[in-house]
Image 1: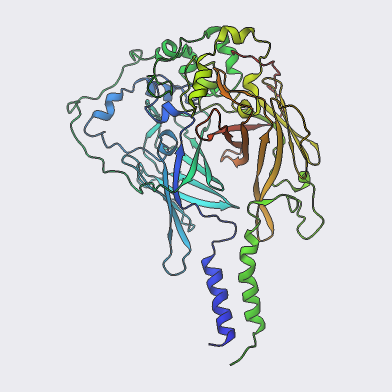
Image 2 (image 1 turned 135 degrees about the vertical axis):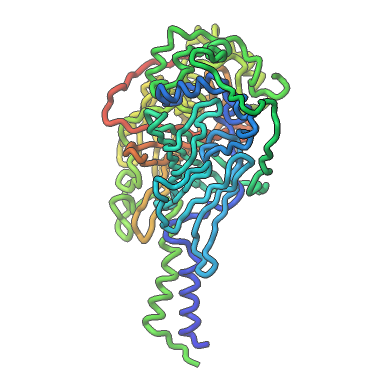
Length: 295
Length: 261
């Protein structure tokens, strides 16, 4: 082989094996740091805790009608959560790329799934989103673009799911924009949900992860349908005005109902002025206090 | 055997070798080549080199840890914070009545906790190499020093000494974005949460400021906050706060520190 051919081969190998300009590698096992919203992401939020959630009257009414027994219905046990569960749940992430077998070019980034959340495939090959009339499912359809070393993923075509694990629902018109910031061995995800049916403003959550040597599973155990105590034909719910848990945040934390019932204004600092005179110090913590062995 | 390389092949080799060079802008120190260019020219000052514009008014968007931030949490409620036994012991002695009467009302407004306090930020350039961040809640001021700034030998303080650098992303010689990284040391001991969760004067703070353009056009600033404290934290305490850009100072409402509200 002449030097010309060797040099040409080298040039081709280098240009093909390198990612497109300014992309970075996201692959690996990323351990979730659940230092914020620890209870909400772990054991789950209180049934009437919608503080900081910018839902509208319809969203609030739907949330108040929700009974947690819903997910014990045989047809709801494997009710897949949408990709929003990345933010609402506590789980770590396994991320890998799918590469074109010939060119090696990254076709998609994949975030592994879990028992009730399907894997999220972020298509990087420029394919368009399906028609708005295409079927929706819990997984949705996601495309991604790089801006420097920041990946932005946009998810559409998701079925109705939840925004918070206590019945605050997202509609099938909701979309999720997920931005990936990598800082060395740390990664922060900013997730923004928009929903014309149930939100008055985008709902924003940010989550942090550390690159881990401990492998994170690429998928969870299979979700198995079984009888969990709700007989066929009964739909657990609360009629308007009949939700028995609407004062739980007040009783437990002295958080007034106007805050617990959420709405966009509860996200902003000046809302504190509205509740200042209504708030008194709650009693010392007895449950879910974050101290091992104390609860 | 020929040892000659044609011009075309040489061009290809140079192009291939230039690709990784084009990407080495990632995580590079921001001493030049910012929005105004600067590659190959004289080094730019940090203000001119800024790959993102953080200046202006920003408002907290409190969608996370709401009951720890918007109201005063209950005594003994430490969910989420990886506290050491020593920290738990100290926090358990927190007494809201004593705190209300304390002359020091600002313990929970130190740099490690400040960006969790609901409020507004005003970010400006103090000079070409110093970024200033003011808060209305607690009326605090932080200064982020770029370049070869040396911290003065001073007593530990609530906001500590902050050294800043741009992590500039480039592609093909063009700036495509970046991050502000801030390291803060020389902190006076304070509280991570109002209900007595402590950090010591050995705590160290690292922050990453990133920007997101929302689909509705809003600018969002996401700050990843990493607090390390071998005395009171079992592992780094990692959280992130978000702020929405404001078009004016509307809502700017300077208020004094409060230990229990």
